Length: 196
Image 1 (cartoon, rainbow, N blue to C red):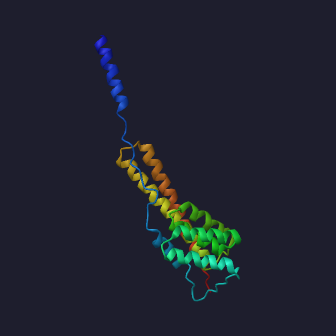
Image 2 (cartoon, rainbow, N blue to C red; image 1 turned 90 degrees about the horizontal axis):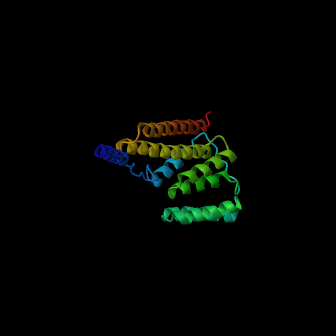
Image 3 (cartoon, rainbow, N blue to C red; image 1 turned 30 degrees about the horizontal axis):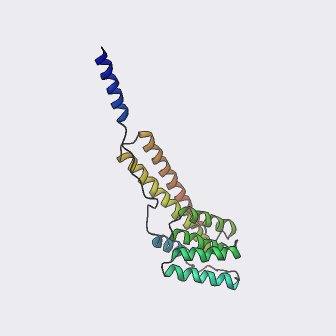
């Protein structure tokens, strides 16, 4: 009888140790390289033949900092470009164009959340039509697509590791939500076009 109880206890302990293997880590950045994303955003802001692009008169120091940031990006010094744009924003915090440039700089340093935050602020302060509007919405679309890619990778990693079906379903729901948000942002980018 004691042997049987000991055997049952040992079996229970072994069963408790038999767990689902851990889900392998997924990189924080899942998606295209930043250069590809930033080019896509800038392409979305290309001026159409029937559009007028009005730019505000900028402070000379802010313009100099913007040019420094662009030169730093071209040199591959993205953190320095971010610093230059941060300085420019300290001088002109409500400039939608400058906020958009900061959103794109965030992508260069793989900060998708920062890119979304700056693009949303630029959108809130800026025009609802034209090239800059399309850049804001395309930035939000790109960030949501990055979130989608990460959620899909997390779902696939959970499924491959034999995770509980509830976890896999949760990851799939997150991916579906990100896909819907990305589609919405793409639609809004198209709505910024001026027709005439």
